[in-house]
Image (cartoon, rainbow, N blue to C red; front, side, top):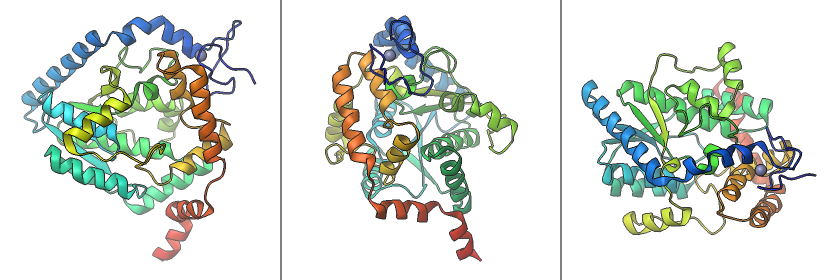
Length: 337
Ligand SMILES: [Zn+2]
């Protein structure tokens, strides 16, 4: 197996091309824009300008809120709500998507955060048959189910934004998550912004979105306009800083050491599916970004990913059973009848 000489991504990574020197297309893109992506003083000003524009727009439309944030029970979205309210003086509406995968840890964090942050909050519970249908199809067709949560989270973001006339949706995607598949500027902040659900989903699903849209098996809320912005593309805050800040500010409880995505009980299975389908752990692309940014070395990234690989190659059969009970549509339909 060949690896990018620079970031260490494997040659079987989705969308990768290694050049004659063994350097990947993602590294070339990052290097070309390194300066712009790391000038956080300028980036924060840009973020500020988007916030001011949203405030004016909200005022003009008579909206009760300047921006919308979906919260999962993880640290990133909670941190953003705090900053938007206290540093940027925004009127923030928050919501969660109840998909049946949240852990007690995540739920308790949300309850605590809402109490301390004192912001309006909506809880969205999609109908059970729709959820099961989406998850079942996604596992069958793509051997993956995280994309359903991503889609639904952003679908409801746009739906709520349209109903409450909220001009700006702020999300907690990290630099790693935004840049992991970036070898072009289309749809990638800060080069280009999404103003609709379709534009936003292009970043995650690429041209698959055009295809899905054509087959009309997915509702992309045509006609709904709102700007989406990823807070961590404009603010240089490390994971450690986010956690320490929240512990002090709102009594945040950190997850047990080494548990990524502690807000989703099925995460281990998502990892296993990624290993089976792609041959590498979920955060492989994110680690590549961290290496390019100089936050960790190629060797450290390899160690982290090796641990993920060991940890997730075998998943507790009880968890697997619990997952399929959760998503199985035929069993649910039988119960209904
Ligand atoms: Zn590379």
